[in-house]
Length: 295
Length: 201
Image (cartoon, rainbow over all chains, first blue to last red; front, side, top):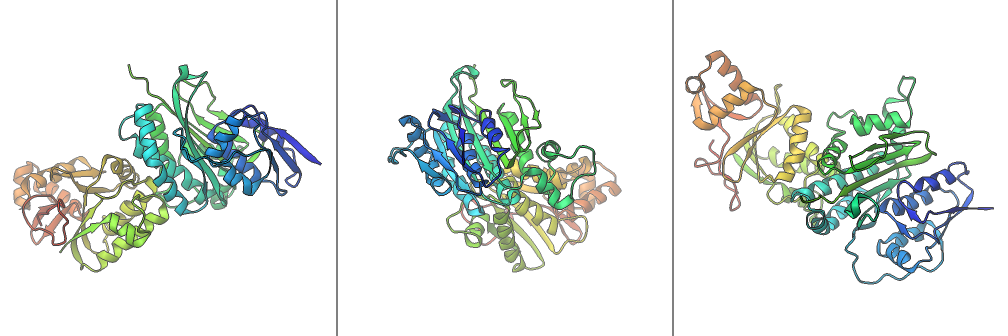
């Protein structure tokens, strides 16, 4: 029997919880069909997390392509299908890639498996990021390098801690309903590896405390810089990322296992910690940087 | 002996000749090894100018692997491997984000030469050491008595601060005198590219 999981019409980090919820009770060898036919839009998080979902299934899942031509074309331009084709049985029409470049796609969906991938990502994003961050979001001139540093550090977490490869994508777009229609840039890095809690346990074992769970592991790593390495120089990457995000009044969230931690700016009404979420392996990171309003 | 080390060249020869960004720990570790190999060839007492001019991006992980671990090996209050002084050159604001973070994390300090030729002390340095370092920068070089006169502090305190600065390789000790790491006329290193710093030593 094939279990059908419907993809929300608008697929972002919040609505993706519906997919995690549908997947959580299923045995990993059960055949699933991810039905995106009625999906009209997906954030970088949505696209990279869809690839991570396929990595968790023992039986190759099926993906039904969005029926809306614009949506499917956009997914093609983000290179999503290039990697989905290896992980899913694809049904529906996948538009052919055109040579025109999409200026909103700062970084196409890209694999993060080895160190060389991070060099590739960093090389590719710098020029496009500069135009978007300074020209469109009106951030300070130093933002491009800081943005790229943040991207590099988040991607390194996959290689050093996940135990398997993940995916990264960076897109810019205009929020229609939030922040008064301001533009934003979003980085998403998703993997289906061992997750933050198991990474810490691999070196230190479970903590001797009444409460040792995914939420506490996220607090330890994201907020206090704990890592599985004994090297005192470790843990600086996420601390640096947090500082940049704060300077840009951005939002930073990490989901791992059954918990999700977020650094929430004033413009957002998210909560800092969500627990008892449906289990999904690995870590799913999202950074949102909004346009600076010039007085 | 003064040695100019172009960090970008070390990156290309040690890791990949297509890379211009210092990102990831493995990359940083490979570059550090490349720098150490060059330091092994320049003798037990040397001044190394680490030139970051052609490095586009330096992330936190790479800064920790290159800058912090290099300093931890050669510069400490314990007995370091050899008497090697480092002058950091060509660092941009984005490099400083990462370098300042790792210096703070490890309680380290370094001397950076600014584009105008003036040296700048970065990292964790206590007030008295910083005062004496600033005095040395003004003097250029001098014996203990010269520094005591210029700083207006007691000889014991000045001597202790100078000794700490020397152990941290933030000033050079030469016989009975101390020398500031700074740009300007003086001994010019031989392999400098145009625009590279000169160092009085």
